[in-house]
Amino acid sequence: MEQKRIVAVRTGKTIYRDGDKLYKVFEEKYKKSDILNEALNHARIEESGLTVPILYEVGTIDGKWSLVYQYIKGKTLEQLMDKNPEKIDEYLDLFVNIQMEIHSKSIPHLNKIKDKVKDRISICSDLDATTRYELHTRLASMPTHDHVIHGDFNPSNVIISDEDKKIYVIDWSHASQGNSSYDAAMTYLLFQLSGNLSLADKYLEVYCKKTNTPLNYVQTWIPLVAAARLATCKKEEVEFLKHALNIYDHE
Image (cartoon, rainbow, N blue to C red; front, side, top):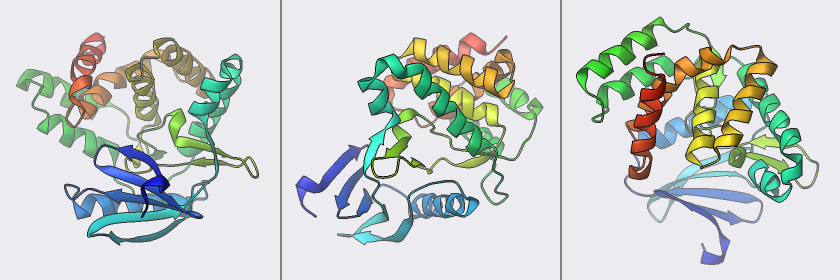
């Protein structure tokens, strides 16, 4: 593939466009099981009726694993927010509506978020034994649901098609099933990690109002979300996530 076809470069992966197809090519460090799980997640989400790009193929390119998707020509919600700041309330309302639609689905074969968070807490070297115990206890006490969770829901993963204005949600590698407030807490932290603290607060306000969810209930998930992300995060996120964990840890 030619360099000019590169769409994005992420940690450990490069995304190319070739005509009406998008190629996500992974570096050798990625485990085959993780890549196949991402493909399986996406296939299950497709079958749920949610609007996502079609997954065409799982294969290799130059010895590297790759996933081949339908290319959607359009703009991300993040791009639209940046371009039209006066419409931020309108876009945020749309953003939460999309997340609510995702949470309305149930896919029994997706991995359970509680199992994932439990494993992440156990392996996180930045947590001492007492903190791990307290987090495990909190996790066990949280209600168990079966809603579809995106796991990385942020405006850059929502594309509005130029052609027909259909809305597509991408990047289902972290998809799971469980309590939708976990997903809201993750989105809140993602806004904060991007540096947009005011938008994070506004998002959580809109989410809680539209879903009739108490704010402090979503906040009880924040230490669990922070701990789960802390286990595999970038170095520059560590201090922020530790801070987020401590703010809500004893509330």
